[in-house]
Image (tube, rainbow, N blue to C red; front, side, top):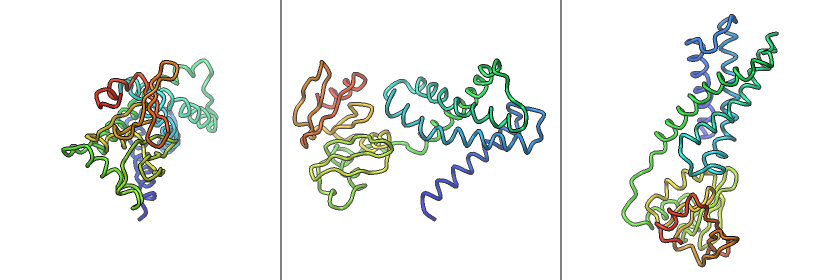
Length: 246
C-alpha cells in the first residue's frame, strides 16, 4: 500500500477515534441524538485536522520558531480553533440551531480548550514518533546520512545548508541544489551532531558551507559558498556562535 494512502487511513482512524471519544464522554453535550453528535465531532475534528496542516508549519517552523513550546502550542491551538468554530457554527445551523452572536466568544473558549488538548496530544505523539537518534561521533556522519535522502549524484557532495520553502526543503550542496518533501524541524533533528546549526526559523547552515559573514542593517547574514545568503535571527544567534559559524 502506498505510504500516502497509509498516512490518510491513519489520519481518518485518528479523527474517528477522537470523535467517538468526545461523543462517548459527552464533551459539549447537546440534546441531539448520538449519531448527530458523532457526526458533528467527525466534521469538526476533520476541520481541525485540515487547519493544523497549515497552522503547525507556520507556528512551529516559521513565524514563532524557537519560542517556548508552551507559547507555540497556545498560539497554534488559538488559530486552529477559529475554523473549527466556524464549521461548528454552520453545522449547528444546518440542524436549525444557530449559535447567538453574543455566545460566540464563550463558544470559542470551549472550542479552544478542546483544540488545546488535541494540540498538546499531537505534539506529544510527534515527539514520540520523531525521537532524535543519538548522534554518532563526528558531524560529517550526520550530514552524510542526511544526503542519503537525495538522488545518488549528491551522495558524495558536501552539505552546505538547508532552507525551508513551504512544505519542502531546499538542500544546498557542493554539487547543486535539490528540493525534498520534509519539515525543517525534522531535518534539524536528523542533523544533530553535524557541524552546523539552525540560524533562522527557515534555515540550517553547515559550518563548512559559509564563505563570508556580513551585516545588513545590523543583522547578520551568512554568505554561502554557492553565493546564496542565509539570515541569522536573534533567536538563533547563540546557537550559531556555539557551532562556530559566526
